[in-house]
Image 1: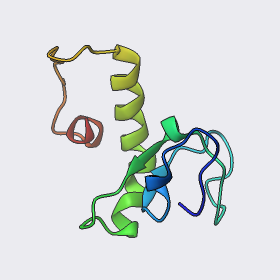
Image 2 (image 1 turned 90 degrees about the vertical axis):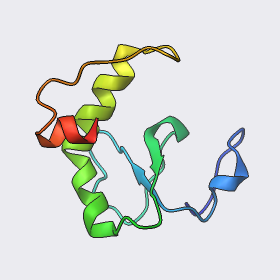
Image 3 (image 1 turned 120 degrees about the horizontal axis):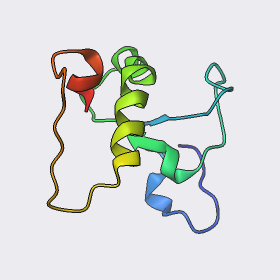
Image 4 (image 1 turned 60 degrees about the horizontal axis):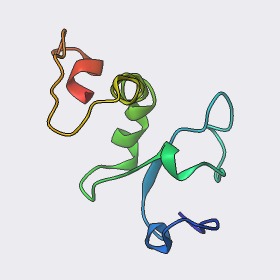
Length: 88
């Protein structure tokens, strides 16, 4: 993250993140995205490994976000041996 917009916590600056860019912009060196569309990358995760989040990671994140789970609720992940289930 090189800069943040108004109302966004400045602690994001300098952090490595994965960003959902929508239908375009995935090959850009830089993109403008909403803070809701970024995930912080753990220090041990390489950029090469982080790229895989674009497929199964997006599907898992989208499904869990759409479920609108409340704190303390659980979810059954069917097919947990697949890439989407593992990511979820």
